[in-house]
Picture 1 (cartoon, rainbow, N blue to C red):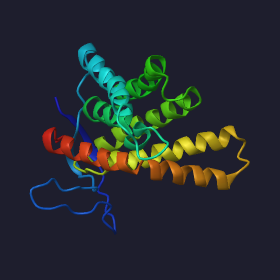
Picture 2: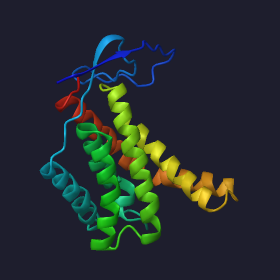
Picture 3: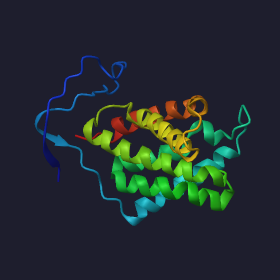
Length: 207
């Protein structure tokens, strides 16, 4: 049963999303007004949640088997845990997205020893921020295919803020450097998140 709500016309002076070629779905960052139908999230059963968790736990170890082009593991570049967390948030909403985001780094650490224990809390925090923001954006702008990378950048920024706060805000320069390093290392993953977002909008559109 569709969720109905009153929405307010928002007009942006500049488009926040670039156009894409014909045949693809247009990224619309303007929420519709009047009695618009907002996307409802499905209710995740135990089977769906288990499958998503299995994917979130299984993908990173498979990626770690592949060679990386630098000292960082491939998973740090491709952000595989973010893929599944976004699928969970897109289809089932913030609750399931947060569940997958919290559980996947912990289970991965127990099974594979990665991510390193000192980064597990930061990664879990980033995934929770990512899931909450992604679900909110999907509800507001269901046809936009840039929501996942935008939420990903925000999550990396939140992780940087957490580390800076833990350090007592003693080095703003180090925080900026860490964020730039995280953004550069995770750029391939942000591109893949865009692809995942576009496929979901194409195959599982929310109207």
